[in-house]
Length: 118
Image (cartoon, rainbow, N blue to C red; front, side, top):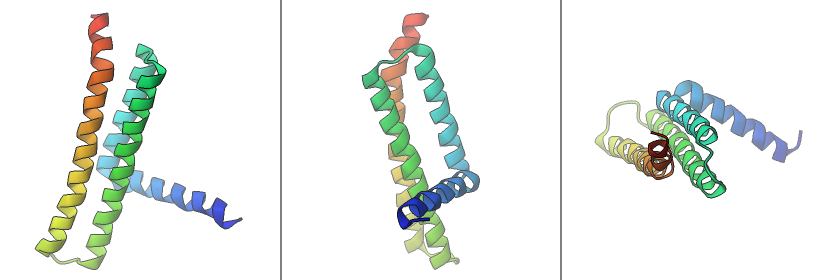
């Protein structure tokens, strides 16, 4: 198998590891599935699909980076060190910001459609 094709194998393994090893990733993935179902049910338009897809991808990618970064910190410093704790806090903050942005996009896209149906 070529190096290019192997990169997809490695990425797939990383995705499986991220989903299996991270509770937060599982939650984010479940929310992404709910957003996909809501989008199909409510019939969002192409622009809305773009916004929803971009923020879903952003949240999932940042959560994988967070998981990888925290794992690396744990390897480099198994004992507690406040400097490494700050790194983990920064990684978590990046995930939080991405999730908040996705929630705002979700409210902008879905809330009017839900209220319209009530």
